[in-house]
Length: 252
Image (tube, rainbow, N blue to C red; front, side, top):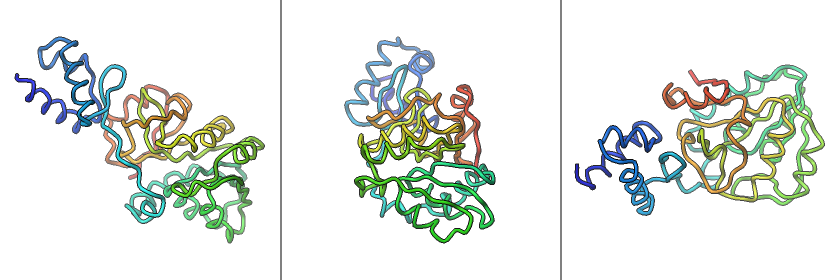
């Protein structure tokens, strides 16, 4: 097989599987691992994929602004939010991280629920103002407008004052090996604190957020206890997360 044909095959496999194993693909193609890794390196340099330890994953998309994301794919986000909201029990304290799916969770909470929400997202606090049974605590600090969340030392110090039953974490990218990653460094610290201070950590990630990675690491995959995703995420793609002890909750 010519190099161009191998490259086309590898990109096709990546599109179908969501990730590539250098060992497995070298065996399938009947070539050395060194040759396969050279192919992946060339495809990475061309911007066609992203090399990771042991293989490759898709290159992540350029993140859209919060305003652009808010109306995008709302039906799926509402469906994911309902699955996530079903995990909340009366009397619990929980973090709601920023993001458009987290906002849908706030809007999906039952009107008879009694709970406490801690968030660093002004839109989420605003959505819960009229909820009769939910106490809301909003972290202050500088606002990252592209994500509509507060960031910085003031926000993280505030969040550390709480221990939560649940932490719902908005996900830009999640890969079994790379962990939970984001495109902007300034948002990492607040997410880390929520993860550290929550007994149960729920990652909110549609299938389009799985098996990709951005430059800034928030936490390893093992820090996550639960994953809420959609029905298009196949069992094959979810297997590495199950192997790491994560409970999967899939949209029906």
